[in-house]
Length: 302
Image 1 (cartoon, rainbow, N blue to C red):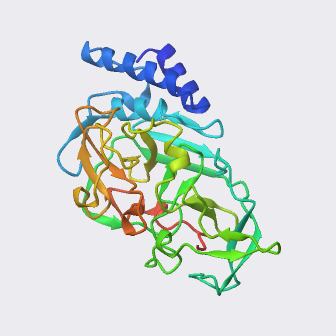
Image 2 (cartoon, helix red, strand yellow):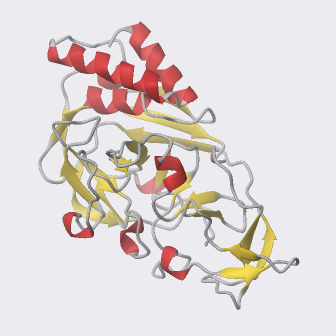
């Protein structure tokens, strides 16, 4: 990829311009078909390939370039490195949030309508800086996702696993409302399947439709909406033909190998289903993951 195309990819990533990103992707695809050698981006040098969970391969150049060209919000910065990409964000999503949320009472790990109260949205800026591999490698055995951040979304906010603070109760299944001082219903999870922790870290537990709608069209295929800590991309619940993906097609970690708009030859990726069970988010990492990213401090739930 030439320096000019690389610069355009990064601009598209920061500005979230889908049309520009698609033009960049087409240019990269044509260059790849012509057999061009790209040594201008450190993360794409060489001919190393990674093997997905079902045996598919994707070049490091393809994954790095596609991630750079994804529809990232203005609040996200991506920098390509040597076989990795560094993501920085303040963690505040680029979409509307509720003015109030159902917040757990002090000491409550798994709240309910009886153990929560309406409170002003406590979301505050975070200091996210994560280095993610762009040559993901299948691990000998999956690693359970931990509490706290497990993936990074194009909106600038974090993805959590499906569970609440006990790491077993599915957040989407236990959504509830409480009354605020005006007698209005205030939800635990908002319409984007997200909410803040009591400490103010906004995150998703399931498919965030208000995020996928930023890059997808109605009835069309899902495009990349994030990347997991092991480097495998995250998609919504539609396959390359625009058909809904069923849970039966996913492995134990909520992933599968199949074509996507960005990877027509197929790639292993995670799928967030529009469901209220544990298929709503990533349950385990299929790829090798840095241990420091699976034991983040200060990740109080929910």
